[in-house]
Image (cartoon, rainbow, N blue to C red; front, top):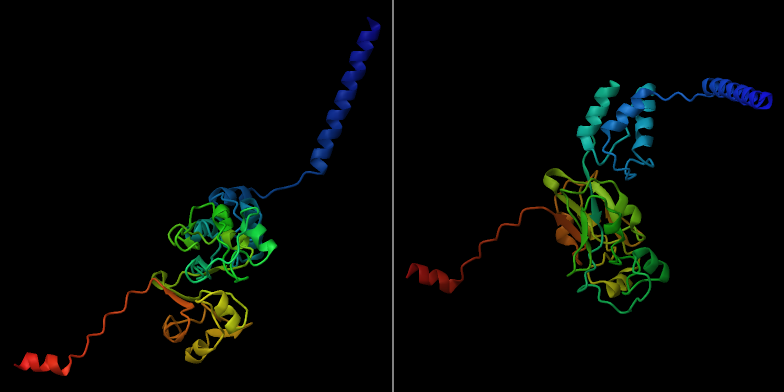
Length: 293
């Protein structure tokens, strides 16, 4: 009986000492978390897409609170929540935030099945990453879209799909949140985040082929050949040619579309512009005679 009582007392003492040690350690090594981090995290959409540059919404919330303590949260943006969510966060933190231009994912490849026919048959793992690792893919173009849909799988918002007729990804402007997941998933970097533009109008070079003109045209009939005609036509210095391919700076572009008109391969695309009005035909001499008769 004394043995059992002694054991109980010893175990109780050990438990009491352990509790005291744990209590002291919890106080001494406690990590303080600003309650505002949790409040900001609740305002964020919870997509954890990484579009903000952080691993998840928790990291973004922590960065926003730290930025507020330093006096500015400019440069931090949640592409999924947009200006509405960022406005709520700014109000919570008592900060002012600059409204950024809305962005959208743009597919910079126009190599449809018709313009870029297949010359090989790939029978491996059906992903863009795997096909890209094996070489040029099923066409001569080693820069264009592979069409396996890695971007579609990466999108959490059902904003991108593969057009079965062209074999190319198409982005739904209304659903796209500009999180950048599709751009990160593309092994050939043909998806870019660009400004949506006024009335969703954009002008961009739909090609990233860095081969010289003749080689690029052999691979795809709609390839940019780096001729520089668009550069000469642009009065706003918005276009440059580097590594045999043109690029339009969306911060400088004024959407005049003159570059679209001079591009010999139609590699420059103007999106969401109204259709041009038909030019009235000039009546022939015979038609004039009939009208006067």
